[in-house]
Image 1: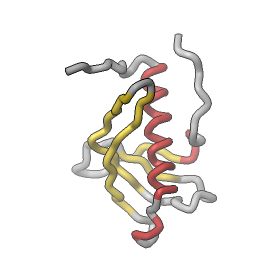
Image 2: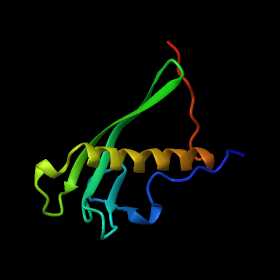
Image 3: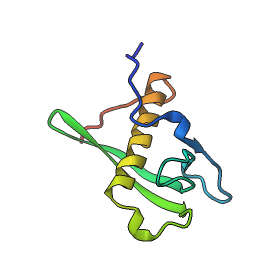
Image 4: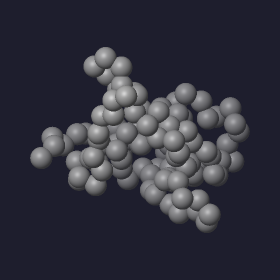
Length: 106
């Protein structure tokens, strides 16, 4: 059994949503005190890049609903926040053995 990790983001601060015609994983930030509350984001091209003894998560995202925020609001803090949500979900899926991390070598 994998050791339980403390989530980077409160799992009750967002929820998965479905969007017509969209198959990518999509979340809505629901925590009212979060500056991005109401924003709906979908993820695509999710990957892990390994270098030496560390790994970096990579992903693309698309803002499905901006909740009235200007484009400039979606800065590095936003990307870090949605990246933390994604990393928490990957950790959870691995712990629950719903996905398995396999290192590929070329």
